[in-house]
Length: 570
Image (cartoon, rainbow, N blue to C red; front, top):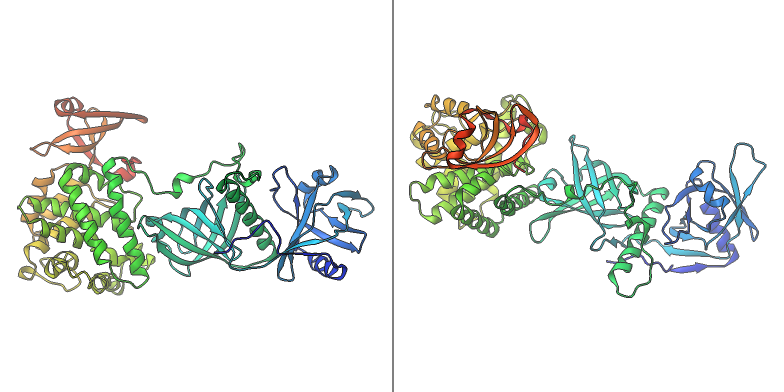
């Protein structure tokens, strides 16, 4: 990629060419004034070039730019910059003196420039940000009420490249308009513009997304602002990237006490509470990346699916309780990713009680992880609807067929396992499920088991049309729905994971509110993390209790919904 240089492409000194360029700069909105700071990086100010007296002077009107008046009266050196004849031009340093005689206007006169420095416009040039040059990005999506956070990678006249977590990127699609893109530099200076998404791709490590953004309109004012920012990015990169450089730092990258606190933490991968949760994000990144592939019309990556199924199975074998808790920590990931991971982990863990071969457990994990990814192809309005009619339900059910069509290249994945888990997980014994309305004996043991695990996790999550169900209410409901669910598998699930499973937030009779991290052989809490007391809700507590000490907390009075308690294990 090309990059813009501090050195102009050419210098114009011929009298007629000078006059032609200055005449074009005199158009309203086409010229900016940039004071020469100690570091050469003051912010451009839009002014009017109202008169040109060849070989004598220029007259500037700064009535609408009071921030320029003090510097001009103090005879601070400045340059005039702007776009003319398809190029960016700048005068050498000038000084000005006040003019009187025009009522209600603030005007200054400056010397006629002996030359103009010219940078011929090149659409390809990009200023790349280097290490330590953190510029945060906020994007307001036009399609939904959501702000996405990222970091600036590079900037050009036509747009920019943004880095953001994969979980944030799945909400972006090619051609999607953005109401606002705002870059905040360490100095506090902001650059704001509308535009649209040009492309969304995962990086080579499947950890972050790279989003290309195009500016809506290349107005002269926008181009002057971008040109200034590009020059300062290049200045800072050259200063920090080459030993022995004597360039002074750019003011854009000097942190200011008055600058708003930059939300850099929002632009990087979320840091979750437990070491296991942070390791689990690698698999979450894979699933987020696969959703991007599906949106681009590409199939599930067979090799990556195999690798991540092995990774997830290894985590389960290493510490099943830590992984079960980690599965409820990933609250910043998309809902389908949270759900897919939770179902996969619980399904494989429950299957282990029946001494299933490792390869079978791996295949089941893989199928369960991706079983809901086809929903990424559904419109947000459908997924967020509070009530679905028959036509909308039919549209929703299409996600199963879409996934089947995109997973055909995963030849290592046993076709029977994939069908029983990924395709039949929404079927019901009474034929009320989808996509095929299978019933009774048409549903093998694995499909019945998967349906129970899937329903328990889904009912425990809030949806647009209802709040999350409590664990006790879910168990009661499924045990009473023997016509739709295999009650034997519901009972096995309850016995295996307990009345209050790992990851539950509970309130004890003492008032203690705690997360359950581990269970004993009788499926009673063996390790809990007390985070507050019900009777002192504003006081945060950080107390770990285990074994017999848990009895001092009293009995469990209720399971709580973390969403309504405003408590997250992160």
